[in-house]
Length: 407
Image (cartoon, rainbow, N blue to C red; front, side):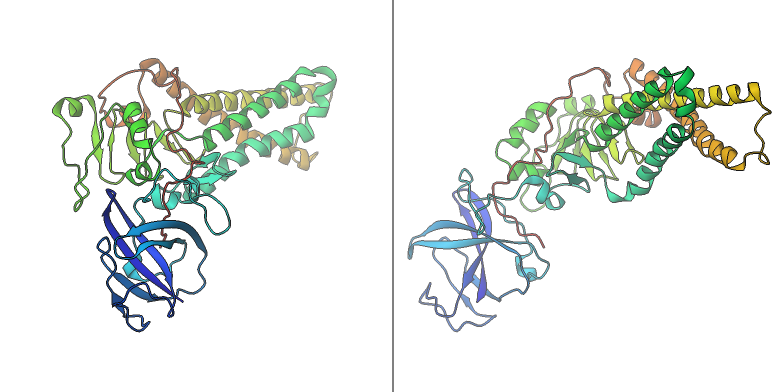
Protein backbone atom coordinates (compact mmCIF):
# COMPACT_ATOMS: atom_id res chain seq x y z
CA UNK A 1 0.00 0.00 0.00
CA UNK A 2 1.22 3.49 -0.92
CA UNK A 3 -0.25 6.91 -0.31
CA UNK A 4 -0.42 9.07 -3.42
CA UNK A 5 -0.40 12.78 -2.58
CA UNK A 6 -2.37 14.74 -5.15
CA UNK A 7 -2.95 18.49 -5.29
CA UNK A 8 -5.95 19.64 -7.31
CA UNK A 9 -5.88 23.38 -7.96
CA UNK A 10 -8.70 25.71 -8.92
CA UNK A 11 -11.23 22.92 -9.10
CA UNK A 12 -14.62 24.61 -8.64
CA UNK A 13 -12.70 27.59 -7.19
CA UNK A 14 -11.26 25.44 -4.41
CA UNK A 15 -7.80 24.22 -3.50
CA UNK A 16 -7.27 20.98 -1.67
CA UNK A 17 -4.60 18.44 -0.77
CA UNK A 18 -5.58 14.78 -1.04
CA UNK A 19 -3.98 11.55 0.14
CA UNK A 20 -5.13 8.64 -2.01
CA UNK A 21 -4.52 4.96 -1.14
CA UNK A 22 -2.80 3.32 -4.12
CA UNK A 23 -1.70 -0.28 -4.65
CA UNK A 24 0.66 -1.85 -7.11
CA UNK A 25 -2.17 -3.54 -8.98
CA UNK A 26 -4.14 -0.31 -9.39
CA UNK A 27 -3.98 1.08 -12.95
CA UNK A 28 -5.26 4.62 -12.64
CA UNK A 29 -3.26 5.92 -15.57
CA UNK A 30 -1.41 4.44 -18.49
CA UNK A 31 1.63 6.54 -17.66
CA UNK A 32 2.09 4.82 -14.29
CA UNK A 33 5.40 3.03 -13.82
CA UNK A 34 6.57 0.64 -11.13
CA UNK A 35 5.28 1.30 -7.63
CA UNK A 36 8.37 2.97 -6.28
CA UNK A 37 8.53 5.70 -3.63
CA UNK A 38 10.03 8.08 -6.16
CA UNK A 39 7.64 7.22 -8.96
CA UNK A 40 5.64 10.06 -10.52
CA UNK A 41 2.82 9.80 -13.00
CA UNK A 42 0.57 12.38 -14.53
CA UNK A 43 -3.10 12.52 -13.70
CA UNK A 44 -5.90 14.16 -15.62
CA UNK A 45 -6.10 17.73 -16.85
CA UNK A 46 -7.41 18.74 -13.43
CA UNK A 47 -4.42 17.28 -11.64
CA UNK A 48 -0.81 18.32 -11.18
CA UNK A 49 0.28 14.70 -10.90
CA UNK A 50 0.73 12.13 -8.16
CA UNK A 51 3.70 11.60 -5.88
CA UNK A 52 3.86 8.04 -4.55
CA UNK A 53 4.90 7.81 -0.93
CA UNK A 54 5.64 4.77 1.25
CA UNK A 55 2.75 3.92 3.53
CA UNK A 56 3.16 5.78 6.85
CA UNK A 57 3.29 3.51 9.86
CA UNK A 58 1.05 3.71 12.95
CA UNK A 59 -1.39 6.23 11.53
CA UNK A 60 -4.87 6.93 12.81
CA UNK A 61 -6.79 7.31 9.57
CA UNK A 62 -10.16 8.92 9.06
CA UNK A 63 -11.32 8.40 5.49
CA UNK A 64 -13.86 10.38 3.50
CA UNK A 65 -15.42 9.12 0.26
CA UNK A 66 -15.91 11.44 -2.66
CA UNK A 67 -16.13 11.15 -6.42
CA UNK A 68 -13.98 13.49 -8.47
CA UNK A 69 -14.77 13.83 -12.21
CA UNK A 70 -11.60 13.42 -14.26
CA UNK A 71 -12.04 14.11 -17.93
CA UNK A 72 -9.84 11.29 -19.16
CA UNK A 73 -10.84 8.71 -16.55
CA UNK A 74 -14.51 9.30 -15.84
CA UNK A 75 -15.60 9.21 -12.19
CA UNK A 76 -13.09 7.66 -9.81
CA UNK A 77 -13.89 7.10 -6.16
CA UNK A 78 -11.08 8.55 -4.08
CA UNK A 79 -10.38 8.29 -0.38
CA UNK A 80 -9.64 11.67 1.14
CA UNK A 81 -7.59 10.86 4.22
CA UNK A 82 -7.29 13.03 7.32
CA UNK A 83 -4.13 11.62 8.91
CA UNK A 84 -3.38 12.65 12.48
CA UNK A 85 0.32 11.83 12.73
CA UNK A 86 3.74 13.43 12.57
CA UNK A 87 4.96 10.54 10.41
CA UNK A 88 3.79 12.15 7.20
CA UNK A 89 6.50 13.22 4.73
CA UNK A 90 7.33 16.89 4.42
CA UNK A 91 5.75 16.94 0.94
CA UNK A 92 2.32 16.63 2.52
CA UNK A 93 2.79 19.00 5.47
CA UNK A 94 -0.08 21.26 4.52
CA UNK A 95 -3.66 21.69 5.55
CA UNK A 96 -6.38 20.53 3.23
CA UNK A 97 -7.92 23.85 2.32
CA UNK A 98 -11.48 23.19 1.27
CA UNK A 99 -13.83 20.40 0.37
CA UNK A 100 -14.80 20.03 -3.28
CA UNK A 101 -18.39 19.78 -2.12
CA UNK A 102 -18.39 21.91 1.05
CA UNK A 103 -22.13 21.52 1.52
CA UNK A 104 -22.05 17.73 1.82
CA UNK A 105 -21.62 16.00 5.17
CA UNK A 106 -18.96 13.42 4.50
CA UNK A 107 -18.46 10.36 6.68
CA UNK A 108 -15.20 8.81 7.78
CA UNK A 109 -14.45 5.10 7.89
CA UNK A 110 -16.11 4.65 11.31
CA UNK A 111 -19.31 6.33 10.15
CA UNK A 112 -18.65 9.61 12.01
CA UNK A 113 -18.96 13.09 10.57
CA UNK A 114 -16.09 15.50 10.03
CA UNK A 115 -14.18 16.43 13.22
CA UNK A 116 -15.51 19.18 15.43
CA UNK A 117 -13.79 22.52 15.90
CA UNK A 118 -12.49 21.73 19.38
CA UNK A 119 -10.88 18.53 18.05
CA UNK A 120 -8.80 20.44 15.50
CA UNK A 121 -8.37 23.63 17.56
CA UNK A 122 -4.54 23.36 17.79
CA UNK A 123 -4.47 23.77 13.99
CA UNK A 124 -7.11 26.50 13.60
CA UNK A 125 -6.86 28.36 16.94
CA UNK A 126 -4.59 29.34 19.79
CA UNK A 127 -3.49 27.63 23.02
CA UNK A 128 -6.91 27.25 24.62
CA UNK A 129 -8.05 23.92 26.01
CA UNK A 130 -11.51 22.42 25.67
CA UNK A 131 -13.41 20.18 28.08
CA UNK A 132 -16.77 18.40 28.18
CA UNK A 133 -16.85 17.82 24.45
CA UNK A 134 -16.10 21.42 23.55
CA UNK A 135 -18.72 22.94 25.86
CA UNK A 136 -16.08 24.48 28.15
CA UNK A 137 -13.07 26.48 26.99
CA UNK A 138 -10.19 27.50 29.23
CA UNK A 139 -6.73 28.98 28.96
CA UNK A 140 -3.33 27.34 28.38
CA UNK A 141 -1.60 24.87 30.67
CA UNK A 142 0.99 27.45 31.75
CA UNK A 143 -1.60 28.90 34.16
CA UNK A 144 -2.39 25.66 35.99
CA UNK A 145 -0.32 26.47 39.09
CA UNK A 146 -1.85 29.93 39.46
CA UNK A 147 -5.29 28.41 39.04
CA UNK A 148 -4.48 25.74 41.63
CA UNK A 149 -3.38 28.50 44.01
CA UNK A 150 -6.73 30.26 43.60
CA UNK A 151 -8.67 27.07 44.31
CA UNK A 152 -6.48 26.38 47.38
CA UNK A 153 -7.06 29.85 48.86
CA UNK A 154 -10.80 29.38 48.40
CA UNK A 155 -11.35 25.77 49.46
CA UNK A 156 -8.77 25.27 52.24
CA UNK A 157 -9.91 28.02 54.66
CA UNK A 158 -13.57 27.34 53.84
CA UNK A 159 -13.19 23.61 54.47
CA UNK A 160 -11.38 24.14 57.77
CA UNK A 161 -13.99 26.70 58.79
CA UNK A 162 -16.83 24.22 58.33
CA UNK A 163 -14.85 21.39 59.94
CA UNK A 164 -13.74 23.31 63.05
CA UNK A 165 -16.07 26.26 63.67
CA UNK A 166 -19.39 25.57 61.95
CA UNK A 167 -20.52 23.24 64.75
CA UNK A 168 -19.89 25.87 67.42
CA UNK A 169 -21.70 28.57 65.45
CA UNK A 170 -24.71 26.39 64.65
CA UNK A 171 -26.27 26.68 68.12
CA UNK A 172 -26.19 30.48 68.41
CA UNK A 173 -25.54 31.80 64.89
CA UNK A 174 -27.18 29.25 62.60
CA UNK A 175 -27.52 31.76 59.79
CA UNK A 176 -23.76 32.31 59.48
CA UNK A 177 -22.75 28.75 58.40
CA UNK A 178 -25.72 28.69 55.99
CA UNK A 179 -24.74 32.07 54.53
CA UNK A 180 -21.11 30.97 54.25
CA UNK A 181 -22.14 27.80 52.40
CA UNK A 182 -24.26 29.78 49.93
CA UNK A 183 -21.49 32.31 49.31
CA UNK A 184 -18.97 29.49 48.85
CA UNK A 185 -21.26 27.87 46.30
CA UNK A 186 -21.67 31.12 44.37
CA UNK A 187 -17.89 31.69 44.44
CA UNK A 188 -17.24 28.26 42.93
CA UNK A 189 -19.96 28.73 40.30
CA UNK A 190 -18.69 32.13 39.16
CA UNK A 191 -15.08 30.93 39.16
CA UNK A 192 -16.05 28.03 36.89
CA UNK A 193 -18.07 30.32 34.65
CA UNK A 194 -15.15 32.73 34.33
CA UNK A 195 -12.64 29.94 33.73
CA UNK A 196 -14.71 27.83 31.32
CA UNK A 197 -16.51 30.46 29.22
CA UNK A 198 -15.34 31.74 25.86
CA UNK A 199 -14.14 35.27 26.73
CA UNK A 200 -15.00 36.53 23.25
CA UNK A 201 -12.39 34.92 21.00
CA UNK A 202 -12.31 36.29 17.47
CA UNK A 203 -11.87 33.24 15.19
CA UNK A 204 -8.69 33.02 13.17
CA UNK A 205 -8.67 33.04 9.39
CA UNK A 206 -8.18 29.25 9.27
CA UNK A 207 -11.29 28.65 11.36
CA UNK A 208 -13.36 31.11 9.33
CA UNK A 209 -12.44 29.18 6.20
CA UNK A 210 -13.28 25.85 7.83
CA UNK A 211 -16.83 26.76 8.91
CA UNK A 212 -19.27 27.91 6.20
CA UNK A 213 -20.92 31.20 7.11
CA UNK A 214 -18.54 31.99 9.97
CA UNK A 215 -16.73 34.76 8.08
CA UNK A 216 -20.02 36.58 7.48
CA UNK A 217 -20.95 36.19 11.16
CA UNK A 218 -17.59 37.60 12.26
CA UNK A 219 -17.96 40.54 9.87
CA UNK A 220 -21.38 41.39 11.32
CA UNK A 221 -20.19 41.09 14.92
CA UNK A 222 -16.93 42.99 14.42
CA UNK A 223 -18.39 45.57 12.06
CA UNK A 224 -15.88 44.85 9.30
CA UNK A 225 -16.07 43.65 5.72
CA UNK A 226 -14.59 40.53 4.10
CA UNK A 227 -10.80 40.51 3.99
CA UNK A 228 -9.02 39.61 0.76
CA UNK A 229 -5.58 38.10 1.38
CA UNK A 230 -2.58 37.91 -0.90
CA UNK A 231 -2.01 34.26 -1.82
CA UNK A 232 1.76 34.55 -1.37
CA UNK A 233 2.25 36.84 1.63
CA UNK A 234 -1.09 36.25 3.40
CA UNK A 235 -1.27 40.01 3.94
CA UNK A 236 -4.51 41.92 3.33
CA UNK A 237 -4.82 43.28 -0.19
CA UNK A 238 -6.83 46.27 1.01
CA UNK A 239 -5.38 48.19 3.92
CA UNK A 240 -7.60 49.39 6.73
CA UNK A 241 -9.20 52.71 5.90
CA UNK A 242 -7.99 55.76 7.82
CA UNK A 243 -11.44 56.22 9.32
CA UNK A 244 -11.46 52.65 10.61
CA UNK A 245 -7.92 52.98 11.94
CA UNK A 246 -8.93 56.13 13.81
CA UNK A 247 -11.83 54.22 15.32
CA UNK A 248 -9.49 51.53 16.65
CA UNK A 249 -9.53 48.84 13.95
CA UNK A 250 -6.22 47.00 13.62
CA UNK A 251 -4.86 44.16 11.50
CA UNK A 252 -3.62 41.07 13.40
CA UNK A 253 -1.00 39.26 11.34
CA UNK A 254 -1.04 36.27 13.70
CA UNK A 255 -4.77 35.56 13.44
CA UNK A 256 -5.21 36.97 9.93
CA UNK A 257 -8.21 39.09 10.95
CA UNK A 258 -9.15 42.73 11.38
CA UNK A 259 -9.52 43.46 15.08
CA UNK A 260 -12.44 45.71 16.02
CA UNK A 261 -11.98 48.46 18.64
CA UNK A 262 -11.03 47.20 22.11
CA UNK A 263 -10.10 43.81 20.68
CA UNK A 264 -6.53 42.76 21.53
CA UNK A 265 -4.33 39.76 20.92
CA UNK A 266 -3.54 37.82 24.10
CA UNK A 267 0.03 36.54 24.08
CA UNK A 268 -0.81 33.81 26.63
CA UNK A 269 -3.81 32.30 24.84
CA UNK A 270 -2.53 33.37 21.38
CA UNK A 271 -5.98 34.59 20.32
CA UNK A 272 -7.66 37.92 19.67
CA UNK A 273 -10.28 38.63 22.35
CA UNK A 274 -13.05 41.20 21.97
CA UNK A 275 -13.27 43.93 24.66
CA UNK A 276 -10.09 42.47 26.11
CA UNK A 277 -9.60 43.46 29.76
CA UNK A 278 -6.68 41.29 30.85
CA UNK A 279 -5.45 37.72 31.03
CA UNK A 280 -5.95 36.38 34.55
CA UNK A 281 -3.78 33.33 35.33
CA UNK A 282 -5.70 32.69 38.56
CA UNK A 283 -8.91 31.96 36.66
CA UNK A 284 -6.88 30.38 33.82
CA UNK A 285 -8.59 32.40 31.12
CA UNK A 286 -8.77 35.76 29.46
CA UNK A 287 -11.27 38.25 30.85
CA UNK A 288 -13.14 39.87 28.01
CA UNK A 289 -16.46 40.63 26.38
CA UNK A 290 -18.31 37.42 27.26
CA UNK A 291 -17.04 36.62 30.78
CA UNK A 292 -16.27 40.00 32.35
CA UNK A 293 -19.58 40.01 34.26
CA UNK A 294 -18.77 36.53 35.63
CA UNK A 295 -15.36 37.79 36.73
CA UNK A 296 -16.89 40.74 38.56
CA UNK A 297 -19.40 38.46 40.29
CA UNK A 298 -16.55 36.12 41.24
CA UNK A 299 -14.64 38.96 42.90
CA UNK A 300 -17.69 40.08 44.89
CA UNK A 301 -18.53 36.51 45.94
CA UNK A 302 -14.94 35.84 47.00
CA UNK A 303 -14.87 38.98 49.13
CA UNK A 304 -18.18 38.03 50.77
CA UNK A 305 -16.84 34.52 51.42
CA UNK A 306 -13.69 35.84 53.08
CA UNK A 307 -15.69 38.30 55.17
CA UNK A 308 -18.12 35.57 56.26
CA UNK A 309 -15.33 33.19 57.26
CA UNK A 310 -13.49 35.95 59.15
CA UNK A 311 -16.68 36.97 60.97
CA UNK A 312 -17.36 33.37 61.99
CA UNK A 313 -13.84 32.90 63.33
CA UNK A 314 -14.06 36.18 65.23
CA UNK A 315 -17.35 35.18 66.87
CA UNK A 316 -15.98 31.78 67.91
CA UNK A 317 -12.77 33.22 69.35
CA UNK A 318 -14.68 35.97 71.19
CA UNK A 319 -17.16 33.48 72.64
CA UNK A 320 -14.41 31.13 73.78
CA UNK A 321 -12.43 33.97 75.36
CA UNK A 322 -15.48 35.09 77.34
CA UNK A 323 -15.58 31.96 79.48
CA UNK A 324 -11.93 30.83 79.38
CA UNK A 325 -8.43 32.23 79.05
CA UNK A 326 -7.30 33.46 75.62
CA UNK A 327 -5.89 30.88 73.23
CA UNK A 328 -2.18 30.20 73.50
CA UNK A 329 0.20 27.92 71.67
CA UNK A 330 0.97 25.98 74.87
CA UNK A 331 -2.66 25.28 75.77
CA UNK A 332 -4.01 24.29 72.34
CA UNK A 333 -1.30 24.09 69.66
CA UNK A 334 -3.52 22.27 67.16
CA UNK A 335 -6.34 24.77 67.45
CA UNK A 336 -3.98 27.71 67.05
CA UNK A 337 -2.40 26.05 64.00
CA UNK A 338 -5.81 25.51 62.41
CA UNK A 339 -6.70 29.11 63.21
CA UNK A 340 -3.57 30.31 61.42
CA UNK A 341 -4.28 28.07 58.42
CA UNK A 342 -7.69 29.71 58.14
CA UNK A 343 -6.85 33.27 59.13
CA UNK A 344 -3.75 33.84 56.97
CA UNK A 345 -5.24 32.73 53.60
CA UNK A 346 -8.49 34.49 54.45
CA UNK A 347 -6.71 37.76 55.26
CA UNK A 348 -4.67 37.58 52.03
CA UNK A 349 -7.78 36.76 50.03
CA UNK A 350 -9.75 39.59 51.63
CA UNK A 351 -7.11 42.25 51.03
CA UNK A 352 -6.33 41.20 47.46
CA UNK A 353 -9.92 40.71 46.37
CA UNK A 354 -11.06 43.93 48.04
CA UNK A 355 -8.51 45.92 46.05
CA UNK A 356 -9.42 44.18 42.79
CA UNK A 357 -13.16 44.59 43.41
CA UNK A 358 -12.81 48.32 44.01
CA UNK A 359 -10.55 48.73 40.96
CA UNK A 360 -12.91 46.90 38.60
CA UNK A 361 -15.93 48.70 40.04
CA UNK A 362 -14.17 51.96 39.19
CA UNK A 363 -13.40 50.64 35.69
CA UNK A 364 -17.04 49.67 35.14
CA UNK A 365 -18.22 53.13 36.19
CA UNK A 366 -15.70 54.80 33.87
CA UNK A 367 -16.38 52.42 30.98
CA UNK A 368 -12.72 51.44 30.63
CA UNK A 369 -10.74 48.21 30.55
CA UNK A 370 -7.64 47.27 32.50
CA UNK A 371 -5.49 47.34 29.37
CA UNK A 372 -6.74 50.79 28.39
CA UNK A 373 -5.87 52.16 31.83
CA UNK A 374 -2.37 50.68 31.93
CA UNK A 375 -1.47 51.44 28.31
CA UNK A 376 -3.19 54.82 28.17
CA UNK A 377 -4.60 54.05 24.70
CA UNK A 378 -8.36 54.56 24.60
CA UNK A 379 -9.95 54.65 21.14
CA UNK A 380 -13.62 54.25 22.05
CA UNK A 381 -15.64 54.21 25.22
CA UNK A 382 -18.70 52.26 26.16
CA UNK A 383 -19.99 49.75 28.63
CA UNK A 384 -17.71 46.97 29.78
CA UNK A 385 -20.05 45.31 32.29
CA UNK A 386 -23.74 45.83 31.51
CA UNK A 387 -24.03 44.76 27.88
CA UNK A 388 -25.27 41.81 25.85
CA UNK A 389 -22.74 38.98 25.80
CA UNK A 390 -23.76 37.64 22.41
CA UNK A 391 -23.10 34.11 21.16
CA UNK A 392 -19.67 32.54 20.97
CA UNK A 393 -18.04 32.86 17.55
CA UNK A 394 -15.76 29.83 17.79
CA UNK A 395 -18.62 27.28 17.60
CA UNK A 396 -16.52 24.63 19.32
CA UNK A 397 -18.95 21.78 18.64
CA UNK A 398 -19.56 22.61 14.97
CA UNK A 399 -17.99 20.35 12.37
CA UNK A 400 -15.37 21.60 9.96
CA UNK A 401 -16.22 21.42 6.27
CA UNK A 402 -13.03 19.70 5.07
CA UNK A 403 -10.58 17.07 6.32
CA UNK A 404 -7.44 18.46 7.94
CA UNK A 405 -4.03 16.84 7.67
CA UNK A 406 -2.37 17.47 11.04
CA UNK A 407 1.42 17.18 11.03
